Structures are given as structure tokens and as C-alpha cells.
Image (cartoon, rainbow, N blue to C red):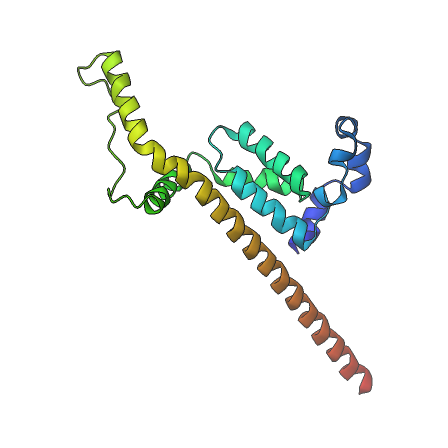
Length: 191
């Protein structure tokens, strides 16, 4: 199913090993878990990508972090980089809001909502606006600073265990299908 599709799309191990750009990095990028599709490597790649996706910055920063995490933990590298795309301009605001709430919960702060910030100058000079922006950032900063890593860890663990569980269910389903086909063949042969 999905594994067969990914095997057709992703390059083979020998192709990767012989690639001129990857060969420069020697053994670091040639570990078999970085490119193979098995349960632990895929689940680890999903976890690394979910963690790296919440790192503040643009996609190249998150891609690099996902790749470094995959190399460090020897999990599926392409999947780790691909999964970082879950944080995008449409999802980053809800994710950071959730991280802010988690940070408030951990810090035992009861403040309700994020402090409002006016983005326009509204008859204020640039220096006054900068002071307002700095005040807003410091009021949000501590819960967000604590909430982002906690949310990233929570997403990584959740992603790992859901992927592992789904992989196991898929394997069990394939075994059952294979056993049903084998039983049907035996019944046909015995007739």
C-alpha cells in the first residue's frame, strides 16, 4: 500500500550511496535506517519531523533541523524533512496559540487570551510602536518559550506512537487478508 508507493517514489539504497552529493558526507548519510522504510525508522522520522516543524523560522530552517534530527537518531530522513511541512502559514497561528496555552498551564498563569497587539501605528511614532511591540513580545514570551518545546515534544511522542500503532495495524490487516486468501485457496483445492 503506502509502503509500496513510497518504495517506488524514493530512490534505492545503492542509488543514494552512489549519489555524488551524498557521497561527500561519507558514512553519516549512508546508514540504512536513514533511507529504509520499516516501522521504527518511519515512526522515528515522523517524530523528528513533527518536532522540527515547530522550530521557529522558515522552511529551510525546519528542513535542516528535521534532517539533523534524522541523522542523529538514525531514522527515515526524507520522511523527517517532509513531515516538517505540517507547520505552514495556515497552521502556525493555531499551533503557537496552543503552545502559548500549554506554557500558561505549566507556569500556572491565569490570563485567558493572548494579549492584543495593534499592528498599525495609530497616530504613534515608530519608536512608540517598537516599545509597544517589545512589551507585547515580553508578555507573550515566557509562556510561548516554554510552550513551544513542550508542544513539539508532545507532538513528536504522539506522532511516533500513532505511526507505530498504525503500522502494526496495517501489518495485522495484511496478515489476516493473506490468511483468508490462503484458506479460500485450500477450500477450493479440497473440493
